[in-house]
Length: 69
Image 1 (tube, rainbow, N blue to C red):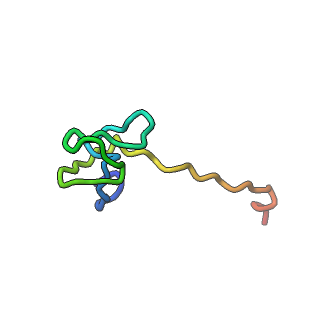
Image 2 (cartoon, one colour):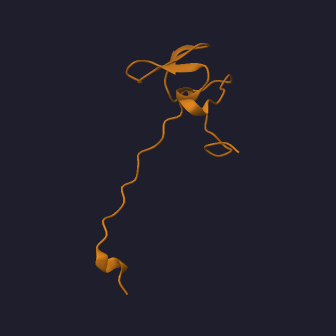
């Protein structure tokens, strides 16, 4: 089973051939040179460890009254 589902949208930001630059605005692809992080080519090879997790959701604040019957 894939970590992020079976259907993964290709993107150079988490491709095996790409590595982000220092500001993470562009990606250096070993096959195509400098490209946008949203770009993808036919050589896309998914690398799950390069994928960055989304933002953590904050939990709402509860009062003790919310848990009383």
